[in-house]
Length: 205
Image (cartoon, rainbow, N blue to C red):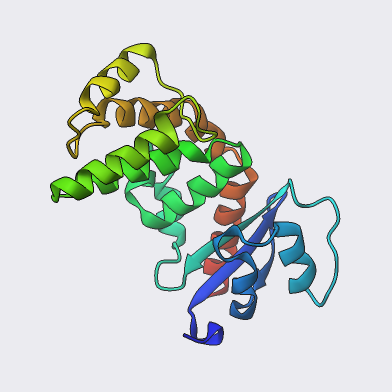
């Protein structure tokens, strides 16, 4: 599919402001994190460079068909459950976690959700092994923070994995994100910018 035909919108958020949108032809530059954010920014606005913004800026990507409305964005503040049940909400929250160097919590939670939908025994075993290596192993750079009790349960269940092998761990990470990251997310420039932009867009329509 031609990049111009992809219905993707990107927003650059910094310091409570939506600075700009990036047109679809620049999507490839940022696809799958193959290029640094600072490089994308430098090439996306008429060759201008934006020094020093890499750490304080976040690119938010939405399919136009799933781009959140102001009502949806506002609902995210009502409860963590509502945020996590909304695909766009999870996407924005994941980007926030990335700025706090804790994106692995969301990635682990999503991997567990995917595992719970799997029915094929061989696939369950393979996915469970990958989850263990990526997020449970102490050798992994993406290891999530779990207490010793939960680790013992996982080490026992992983011998004969099922779709629910990581249920206790998933709940613990969900609770961690809820209590620790979610309040900071609601006070972050990322969330406030979306509220501000959504309110501005609604007032214009």
